[in-house]
Image (cartoon, rainbow, N blue to C red; front, side):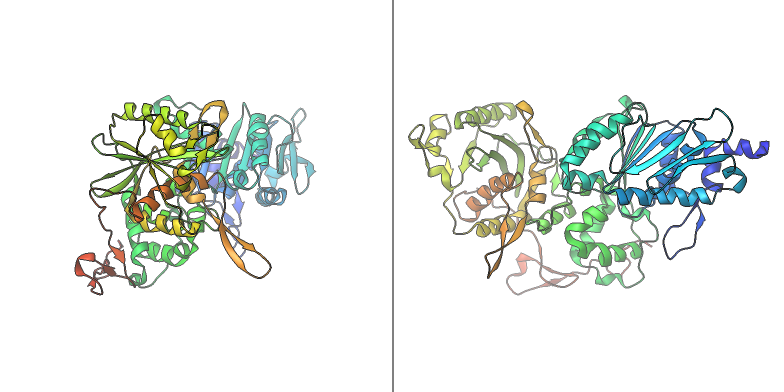
Length: 547
């Protein structure tokens, strides 16, 4: 090759704008790759700042797979002896990514390809080397795992869904694949599934978020989030007055939090495409980083209520106010988890100010915890609230559980009466949710206790609590699943049942929330009384969205 061309090849910016061809979609023609701003950011982090640990959390179809495929090819061409691994949910998915690399390889300038010889080329491996003597092999492998060699570049795709669907494979990625690139570069590129649990969360995202920027090194995980609206093609033309009140308020809250402005076309696209997806919208098209961790299970019971909490900003920092009573609400377990939800009613809000969980511990243990909690937060007035089985007798001591709390210094524990059906209690929670605020730190943090035990946060419990269909041969019923996520929901249900049935009496009643009574722009305001409506048009002259 000519000297001028060789000099250009030393510049990664030139290579990524003049050398590599892609085919964006089946219906689109092949084209020369032109990085978008977010793709340039990844290139800068890898090629200029030499970062070695990147976790790209993203919405669907933002072009990062294409970018990373080209980065793999770029390393293959210009780094002698490089070993690269592509790990994905399925081997076939990883092989599709290798096809992108093949596509770009085949469209390189002929005189450039002529300098290399192909030693191995199949659906899962591409191995090349320069034809000049002494060059070492350069190899890319694609599959469900890295295959033992030391890797200079490891690309892990869709680890978020893997950690939810296949925890064993997720452990292998964390304990086997990632260490294979100990001295190399690891890039995780993924959508998310589930809450703040799993090895990707524990080993990558959580520690990466906790590192202060001034202390961050090249070896620390850098967490990058890319929302749906970065794709400027996601717009619809049409009348925005069809956007529902709930969707309108949600998008306005995103504008406020993300410091952005949606166009009318973006707002209408979100309403038409994302809003109907219900539990899938946070997984496929998140607007905020916090949303990806709220992607619920299919059959999520509190889907709409949690979506409303996000849209209305009711997951935020709230202080523990020492002058107000705290209700410590339990879900009683024996060999399984026994959580506590701490509730205060302040300024017309039902505030869940803290959450704790443990298991296989005695009532005196929990009383000691409550005593220490009161001292730490300088709270004098704390009342224990127990579900109906608080009246049951503990055979080991021959008195009831509520009496056990009294003997440990917590008299007058409130015991909630048994309700006829579990779904009735769930409905009490749904009815109470519009008044509830979660503390964003204490209720979103995974509970870690001695001996490596871990429990999901209360927010995760609320997002992941689900129902499944059961059949008895004739009838189909939906039954809530009793699992690690149900416990926190049951503790909150203890409070909601107590409040809704009058067992918990609150001095200052929570403020009523304005409820949507039907149709875009029509709001029900309690002060107008039953059957009277106040018509509100949030869009005004339809210029409420920014052009």
